[in-house]
Amino acid sequence: MNKFSLSALVAAGVLAGGFATSASAADLGGNCCADLEERIAELEATTARKGNRKVSLTISGWVSQQVMYWDDGVEKNTYVSDIGTTLSSNVKFTGSATISPGYSAGYVMHIETVSSEALLGINQNQDNGRSILADRPNAVQVVQSYWFVKSDQLGKVSIGLQSHASDNTAILVDGSGSLVPANYVAFDYGGFFHAASARPLIADIACMDCNGVPNNAVRYDSPTFAGFSLSASWGEDDFWDIAARYSGEFNGIKVAVAGAYSESTDNNGPGLNQFGAQVQPLQGGDSQFFQIGAYVQHVPTGLFLYGAYATLDVDNGGESDSYYVKAGIRQRWSSLGHTVAYGEYLNGNIDNNAGLGVSENSLWGIGLVQEIDAAAMSVWLSYRDIEAEQIGVLNNDFDYVKFGALINF
Image 1 (cartoon, one colour):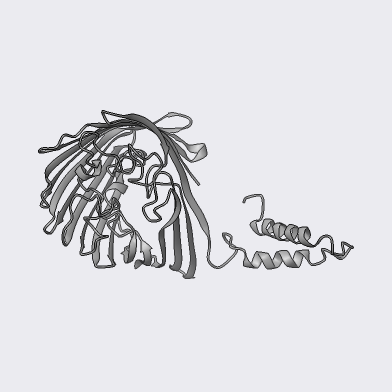
Image 2: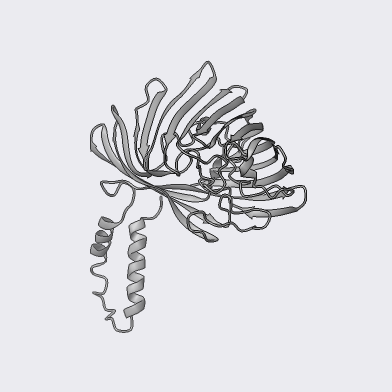
């Protein structure tokens, strides 16, 4: 788009289509294209492009795919897939316009592709997943669609389908560059089950992202003061939350901390996260969820440590507690970009009042991420081992290796 005008290309396409359908009947004399400049000007006035209209348009997103080899203790196989909903290939349309100095209004439309990889879609018996929303192998689904009004001094108010204030609060402070291939949400293995008991892996995974589904809501985000910011939201039906964040750097040490608390009486709120009601281990009445995460990095050496803790309490449904730790090094050893080497560990406990007993789960893994700055790209190779223990249930370990990449645009 730096070399060519989008509107000129559209105009060329319109004109080409016109000639294709009427060339046999048209008079192709010297006056045939006399109105070309006028027509292009009309198209320029109606074509959405950044800087051309009062409301700007920015298109962003990424494409992500990976190869996943898994072993459940009985069967082994290799799949080619995306990396789970909310991390799947997607495109986001963002616009804004200045109302007056310091005040603006805008919109966000976020669309995700779900192509044979949806979270919980792939498992030992299904190598091509299904969209959770569309219930079909390939689909496009709306993740967010909202408008906002923003003041530099007072903050931003957003209304529509969007992430809540507490959505991914603890996870997003991870600044290591390994967040996509290594985080505590079961994006790429949540659909698999234990070979011995046929029990879903996710039934034994304590909830750490219990408010992970965008919903129709009203949200407020404060301006950032000295590295601190606050957010709050209310959503259907009924849900509310509040979150606090801080980031800063002192003597070559980066620090980021974020925490959030939420309550819900809705089946789409905490306690029924993006894994869906049919597999969430804690089901019952009203729920309360607390999460906190922190990231520390020594910039000169690249050494980093990330940790998160989450606790979920569902009335008449039980409770779960879990923590996640990741440590490693982020250093520029190549002209391509930063290299990230890490190790990770997750532990969770579920005390279910619905008669399923107490279960404990753990996950450990290692991985390597290579950033390629010239292509806005990250490539990763990682290994994970998942273990679950429940009284009276025989569960196999689940291991998998994945090699994949993500390209931003």
